Image 1 (tube, one colour):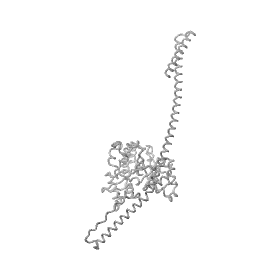
Image 2 (tube, one colour; image 1 turned 30 degrees about the vertical axis):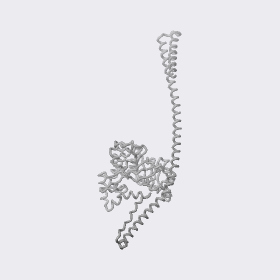
Image 3 (cartoon, one colour; image 1 turned 90 degrees about the vertical axis):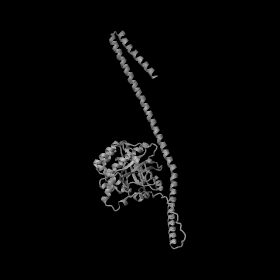
Image 4 (cartoon, one colour; image 1 turned 60 degrees about the vertical axis):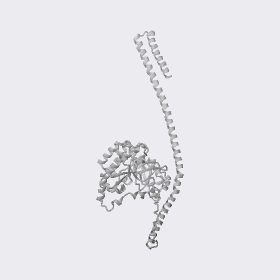
Length: 449
């Protein structure tokens, strides 16, 4: 229809221009060349006017269509938000009975553990009496059947931390060694690439879906002992090895993050950094160049600092943080010992996560000494764009109590202890790691417990 209308208008314009030329030539005795020029000028003018008017009309129609599309998009966004709100409410309603059941089962599990201990004590007592009777000759001529060994009682919740520590050398491995010997042991482990990467999941509450992992370092001695970072960090910092350890950990974190993103875009990784890395000019320049080349991972790779380290930051550290923030990377604070925090200040420095031990949130005595009421902490942080993560969770009752504090994320031995990353997950380079099986889950990167 518009094509026919355009043809009709073009014909009319040509006829009108021709008529003007004919009137000038026949009616006003203007010479033919002048009449033709005037007719051509009239044709051009009318054509331009028609073109401009069509453009203005089309622009108005397009603006109306864009406005309608914007209104439709806004309505759709509101509908999606309402559906999400209803889904969250339904999930909470569904999860609440399960949590109540777990809370009721906790005391029973504790009693079972105590009964297991009593059974073991009784078995040991019977065995001792049998041995005593045999020595006295009461059981002479007969073989005394040794009592059956009681079945090992499965540890109840709350003892997971002990089970991990039993497999870790820790400070016992350093006992009796001088500081120089400890420094030499750490230096040899770094040179021999015996600083291993372990991952511990951070889950959503109450759904318990893995949302992030925290990467922690473990030192493996020549004898196979595994030493957690907390036991060797101070010595490593004193001898200037932490920047080298951090760079190695970050390189592996980038590899792991790339493999995680191949499976799911919703899983991120927390990587611990020391203040020494931020102040070492040469190492930080290399570190920054490496992160600049991997800035595509900025939304999924977060760097974590302790509260004590952050409070000691000076101009150099803050400048280093700003350089990372300019490349899109975000930060987290852990090892929080008090709630004297400024959410707006942390947000301005690109901190998006705050990890607080669950016991600190429940400590009413400490709460009176803090600037922030623990019950209001999650909401206050959310206003500044910071997510609260409750860490060191070891019992089901702790999870139930945390729901009253609006805590969205949790971390602790209840969900999983730190587990080593499989060696094949660290093969390849950071920018071209070997492609994993697309059917494997993010947890498949971890070695079996």
